[in-house]
Length: 567
Image 1: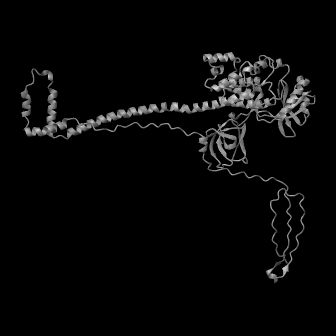
Image 2 (image 1 turned 45 degrees about the horizontal axis):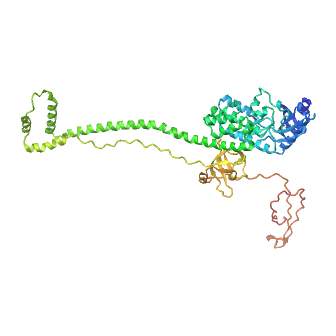
Image 3 (image 1 turned 90 degrees about the horizontal axis):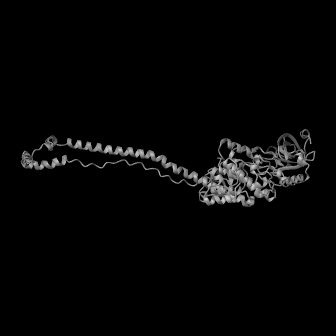
């Protein structure tokens, strides 16, 4: 079949525009659907396989089975036909996106592995698509990043996974499925690389390899054996992923360790069993990251505020001691200045004599007459009796008055923040709307399992809607029947929204405007200026009957008021 003729002629209702890629079994073209006015992808079977009747039969049967399926993570099959040379082709919706291989290359250049929640949710969408295909007994022949597309969306965290080439059958000559040195070979199970039959456990291995690459940034060195797992548990050794990416939830390590086992009997037997443990790992990672985010501020905040408080308390205590000593000295000086001159002179003389006469110069014992002479020099016993208490009361150092030492400012005890009311999306994809109701326009969709923070609700108990914010900061309304409360106590305390957006007014559908037929019955009226004689109005001219009946007659018009004919 000449390639030039494909671009010149129409292939059914499709006009080929560009050859996109050359795949293993098909050639991918960008075409235009002239009937539905949209771009499409055409996978035309290559000549080598178009002559294989067994392959062509299985190709067409799988494509027709998938044409009956609509799933957000499976590229829909729009049409199955045959080219002019007899080669079968499949028309699919054109996806505006890029392959998972491109995303992995971006992460490798940044030298940062993917966020665990992002990686688990991405694989969860893949598993959801394969779960539906498993029920149809359809297995993917080549589950690897080249056949996984990520739609272009506003935020990178909102990637929607689309699985392609699910209609391509597995080649009977299985030893030619992969060649040594092909990087896609690492994503296939050991039995598939060996040319054996592909089973659901084989797809579990491919999902585990994709998840390992997202979390570790590299492919696993080798498959996991059951004896190796038992040996690691016995001696407390970590798994290969735990060495490459520590800090994840234990459920995540167990999920990947079991998915990458070399023996198919040691893996999950079905995609459904894999999804059950994948959901457990998602919940564990969500709790693990939430606990880390809450504990991180409480461990750093005391160290941040403790040092300046200690320095401030030290300066305040030193200042209090200095101020207390200065106050005591000032009090003593003020007390000495208040003494009479005689007492002050006696005190100063006694202090000077004691200071000028060191005890080491005395040659003999002190004489008692010295004390008597000193006492006799006083004016009189009465004066001595009255002055002695005064001198003692003055010379005795004053008791320090209690000073108010500044106390360190109380440190603010960290209070527990109120729990944020949250809900979890229960369905696969749920619309986020501009207002509380399906009449409002959709502003996007939220994937299943995502957590949403609840801001308010519409105060309608029969049809409750929540005003929520997503992890990416989008704000919109979501129905309460499609979500589940994570913390019912906190959700019960959510207040109604202060204002609600007005309901959109449906625009009128343009249609055929019917002609209104008005039949006026003339009633005789009395003209005040004609003496009471009745006047007969002229009969209105006949109108044409409407060619088409009205679409939705709203109401019968009232008869027009009649006037007296002009003279």
